[in-house]
Image: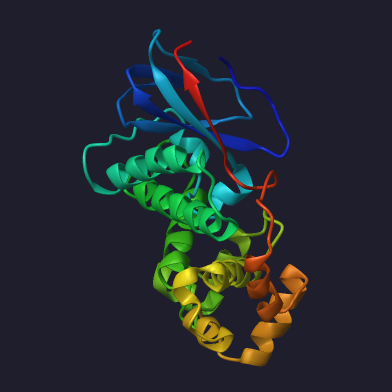
Length: 267
């Protein structure tokens, strides 16, 4: 197999269900065994090899969505992640369990939560991989990783600002803004979007049914119910209460940014 250019750009996560396989990209080779996984950049050529009898799960993830959880994912292509304990094992078990269960059908709310958990664990797993000293990772990329890690760790702090981020990361506020200048959103918009997405997941979660919209908003870094309602409606096109009510009538989601998974046998 080989990668092909596509739009929107996607990364692919390859996880071995049974047997063994190898993924090649950027001159690296990831040898994978039962439970192991790796990422491939779908916008650039790569190869996947596996003997007959090998079963692999392939998960397509929109690049823009992946970058919200994994900084500089292109530097991690063909890096083998072992299912030998820690976060890597948690993610491997979740993905394998998800594939077994999704064939029997899951509700929209459950799929939202599982997708969020997969991305969160993926970010946690790759956060433990040393990259800052990779010769191809520029100083700017290394600073961006630090900034994103700090934002993710303090996302729900109501006083999270570019100035506070700059002090914590020992860079200037101007440089913090510069690190986001190549994106379509400013650092403030990035923080707002991540909070809104987290709130939307909480609003659909069965475990949060007994909590008010205001309580959920305050838990996720907002300090004004009016402001939360206004920005939520601007982003999702409906009020938080209407969004929550849709969980009872929403159809099975498909397409878009949602990760698409399929099993593949030996090739």
